[in-house]
Image 1 (tube, helix red, strand yellow):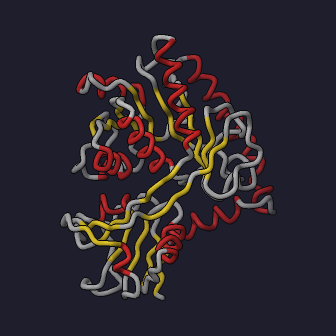
Image 2: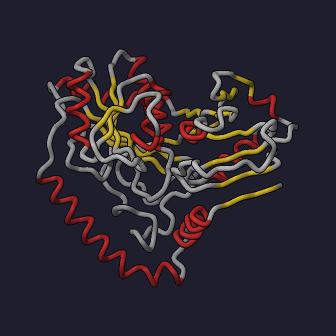
Image 3: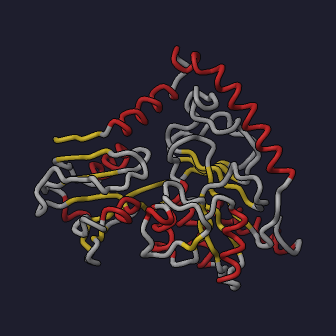
Length: 340
């Protein structure tokens, strides 16, 4: 199998390896973690003192570890549930990786360079209003001005953006959990854990320690069909036994490749690229007539020059008890007549 991994992706992998255990490298960086923790604590107190309400119920989907934890699929699932329950949700995000700095709407056809790849994907996949801004409250206000019918806000990321008051906090963990439990840069933690949240969602083993919040396991799997940039759909099973190329520019590309393998697809060539890679310099390893398979997030940028790429959505399942908890929290917000 042909494999390609950029230097940036290799550095990410090296950091993740360092963060898995309390080895020599982690202990050498530990004094800097103390400084980071002091600055993080000061900033959190400052934001809490100036915290402002959105005027609507706010659900924050975030994490406490650096790198991808699978927040966006959870956001997609939460929005789908809210719509099914009769809510009219809107989404806000910082728009990580974009080349702009203003507050703007992310549309289904917005370039990732203008709004970020995840907001563009969320707009395309959910069909609800999506706004991006560094200050989440600014995004909320712009969204409400244009879409006054929206009655609940879902923040994709923003667990540490405490300037915006929130009613529900969902903390997502991937299968690496807390790693070595150190704060950045000696470990993966953005803030000390455990910390109060509404619920903890995890793939793989649950994080230790867990804190007081209910803990729910989530299941992820690839969808049964893929779609290309020309609007065509194809069963994922069709690619089994074929000579295919797979590319992933996400925090953990090897997870995507492993999921393909679990579906009976053994890529002839793989390319593991840095998270949020722009694909401007991307070149294929196989001939263009050979299938190219990518993640749904990567398709937002890849389809611009490679509409032949087949994007495979990630499907997520959460237990009914989680949805009942979310519904109860929102009912309580409505009963007290507003938002946090």
